[in-house]
Length: 299
Ligand code: MG
Picture (cartoon, helix red, strand yellow):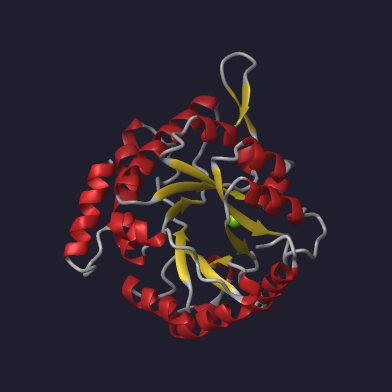
């Protein structure tokens, strides 16, 4: 792996960076996101914003996000642009693309040996389309249909194959939870296990990381801090989300979430506000940035 990576890096240097190969792009992407207000790096899942950062408004909208304090983002689509157009607009705004969310469509079918290759091929195509961004992560946020422990293990097996495809392109593949991942499913006899635990323990740490959505973890009646520490090496990304604007509900212990996440050696997180169609997304995304900029526990 390392010799291949070195070879690819050399090849990229010989071509003076014109059309960087993915592994070289990955190396370049390891640079920290630019710092904003107060020297902090704050990320945003772009699903949080609506028409104000889309289509003809994208370039201006991205600049507004940068002014709010967001320095890096996770995509959820290309906002009505080609990859090269979007790359230029984020570069111009001083925002780095670190990750993306994507879901394969299996028409409601469970993951199985029969559709495994089709799912992996979906990711390979997406990895190619996202290579030019120089991002580091590529993440699935949707839970496949799972009824039993064996179903969850089959999904984990497919996740490993997706992760292998991503790793070949210099990306780390990740899985993002909602609340149902904390449901227990049955196996033989009386055995019961949580889906999220199966995903983490049945996937290869070299191929699959976990993006923990801390709000949905609480909605799954779990303590995100406990999970962050139980799987300190696996939970490498966070979705920082509250019921609406960060800090307003009082139900999220963001101080301990950040302190423990940083203590584990991680620092990449994405603010998320799920308020689609309200017309108030930009204000709520801005208020959420203000909360983190004022919080002394956020670096
Ligand atoms: Mg989320």
